[in-house]
Amino acid sequence: MRGQVRIKLGERLQTLLSLIEGGETLCDVGADHGKLPVAALLSGRAGKAVATDISEASLAKARLLAEKENVPLRCVVGDGLTPLKQGEADVVSIAGMGGAEIVRILENAPCIFPRYLLLPHRDAPLVRQYLKERNARITRDIAVKEGKHFYFVIEATFTLPWKEQSLYYGETGGAFAEYRRFRLEKIQKLLSLKSDASLEKEKEELTDAYGGGNC
Image: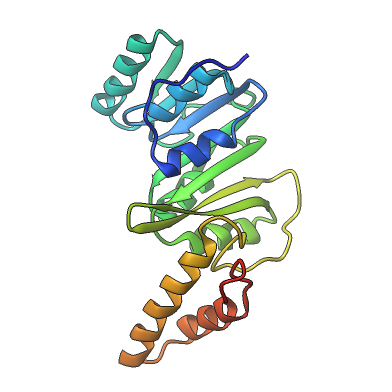
């Protein structure tokens, strides 16, 4: 039975939380304040949770929040996933950092975990490209708007092979239609300053994409 979550989450973390289910063991990488793992424990979406961070000072925030909410959050100092062993997590969340840093963490992980929730604050195509190169399946790729900014929550697993999709965007529901308009306008402005093959390719794919009825 899921309990009441007293922690206020933004749209990004709320979307991540919605993808944790079945009493899984969650590892939140770069946990900082610890809101996601504590909320997952409070709601019953996670049966157990571990928070990792390279900074002891940052992990202290997560410990304090867990103590305040009286949930058993395990906190481990370390770089990315390196402190964990096989079987210590069912689902891994990596959020609040750029795509290149997420790729580095995945590349340096000591083992593969069943499921990943990845939320880059920039350079999401780098994450998708890495998953494609490693033949990992993206199972959800949700456009999220928080404040004035857009993000993608990417759910992935290495237990299924890559299924072809755009490297520039994910699912066409949610906030995708608004993101699509915003991004096409920005690309057009950038292309008016100088030509760029990658931007031309992204423009082509976004132009052809279904925008939730708002094309």
